[in-house]
Image (cartoon, rainbow, N blue to C red):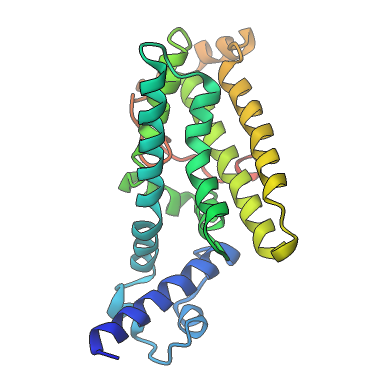
Length: 250
């Protein structure tokens, strides 16, 4: 094996080990020593050499996993828009574009997979998610938010931003649950059941987007302190400032 190939193998081993540990126990709870041990790496400086820090290895995982999702979602949105012509996409089409690229990757490629659970771990860690959001890696989610606004031109922007956050969080949770089931059940995992769950979730999330804004919500919105209007595009998951994690965001 050449020196370059050995470096690549070491780097890949560290990446995969870190992704698994981050997904199963959280980024903040995972130490560099644990990653080295899981990768079978005796050199305790390996992560610093290849990635610089724990944040560096997390960035490298995102650079590996997020671009294929963006490419698949962008292609799907382009096809949907071509078929829709001048009309806005329906809520069901929007939700399908949000979820399908992640689900297709999960079901079409051999596991075990850990990316969905890692993203969910990041989502409930305020500091890590803020950093990820500001990096604006998942840029195709900007298109999802724009399509929601096109489909609901008379809804308050604040309500659309809130519902966008809800469907993104729900989709992350559902795909992570399917990923966990695939990992734990092995041959007993049913892709058909997974597709059923996603169909049900797609219907439910479409209803969230389509529901009228209640008089109570409008009343509270009028009482809320004036803030800067939500942007037409959004970083990473569409959240201008990720809320502090709590039980409702899991």
